[in-house]
Amino acid sequence: MTDATAPLRLGTRASLLATTQSGHVADALRAATGREVELVPITTAGDVLTGPLTQLGGTGVFVAALREALLRGECDLVVHSMKDLPTAPVPGLVIAAVPPRAPQGDVLCARDGLTLDALPPGAVVGSGSPRRVAQLLHRRPDLQVRGIRGNVDTRLRKVADGEYDAIVLARAGLTRIGRTGAVTDTFDDEAWPSSAGQGALAVEVRTDDAATIALVSRITDADAEATSLLERAVLRLLEAGCAAPVGIAARISGDDVHAVAEVYALDGARSVRVERTVPRGGAVTGREQLAAAIVDELLERGAGELADLAGTTV
Image 1 (cartoon, rainbow, N blue to C red):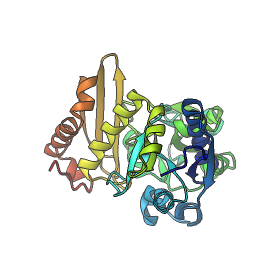
Image 2 (tube, helix red, strand yellow; image 1 turned 180 degrees about the vertical axis):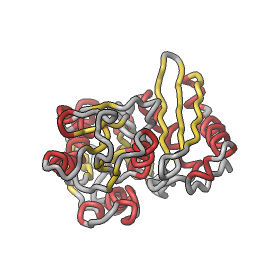
Image 3 (spheres, helix red, strand yellow; image 1 turned 45 degrees about the horizontal axis):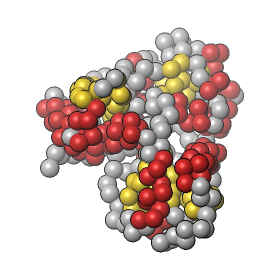
Image 4 (spheres, rainbow, N blue to C red; image 1 turned 120 degrees about the vertical axis):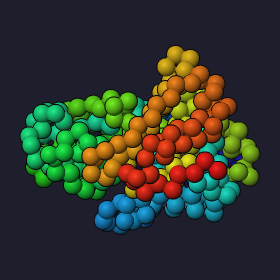
């Protein structure tokens, strides 16, 4: 249990994007609770190891060290990019808040201000995400799509230096660190669904720390929570990790929630797509049932033949 007068200790990765995101959460908590918040930098395996992300254990490599530090009591809460968070629950931890969501789609950052359609045949595009690779080849099978690692500025520099003609990134990350000037093309969320939870943040707290849970819950945004948790439910029932080419996007439209889920073959040649629109309340109280219906239809239409999906609605 935390001291009611002590600063809340917020564990964060040390990268520019991570500390920026954590800083936004810290500011929101200060405003909502009046408590001071201090950032506690934590190094993760994904920050120090090299090689393709999928070979290092996927986006979960960024999460494990933060969770371990939280469970050890080295901090009171941690902030994750929702898209990096494995869907399996962790005993002793709970998502206590989902703050307002940043733009959830992908963008292109290309040389000479080029759009995706304007890239020349055979152009080299960088992405370390199997989903983005499949989507790029689905739209432009003539492209050469190559893996890429490094922080946002490192990747942008590789375009500026001519190593790549373009790269695909999350719009949210560029927005949060003020790099939107590098964007040359923006992809529509419905035509190009992004990763489950992309643009959303998840604030985790120990389940036995009721006082911190109560404080952190004050910064939750209902729309961000409804859409991102629905996307995560679909991903969890598909049993698809970061190596699976799956795009999932949910959006609030008036009083409804519109969800799109698409599974791609790794080479982008084929895909299976499902869409559902339900009342907003149903997307919250009936989240698991809606996610199960989407997954059932994806599997019935052959999504499991395109990608390695265990897929279960049990």
